[in-house]
Amino acid sequence: MKIHQWEVWKGRPPGFEKDHWFVILSGQERCDNANLRLVNGLACYSLRGQLDDKIEVRLDAADGFAAATVCPCDFVFPLEKSKLHSTQGFVSWERQQQIKSKLKQVLRL
Image (cartoon, rainbow, N blue to C red; front, side, top):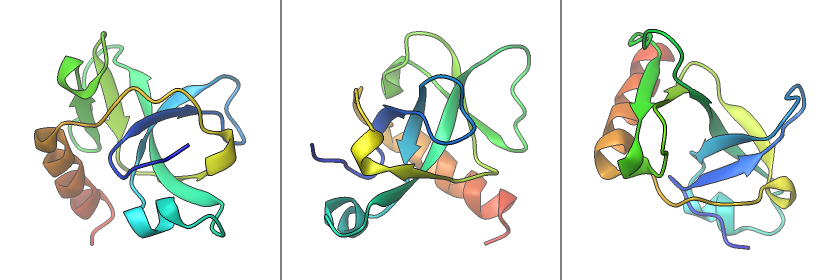
């Protein structure tokens, strides 16, 4: 199993009752290093109601999602590589730029 930065993977970290999709944020060096068991990811949720454009980026079919999906950028989850499964491709370049911008803004980087 090879994990890539900006790829979308399914997993269930502590505190989640069921599997969710996650956008992988960690750099490729961490993703490739077998001695490092964790990667960073942003959770993805179905869009219900209004988009909170202060913290969320909307994902769509270009990012592999059939339904409107949001990616809150205010919390990064540690994900065990060995527990990730079912990739659905990469976040589009445009959305990558939006996520980067939102992370800088929300986390005040």
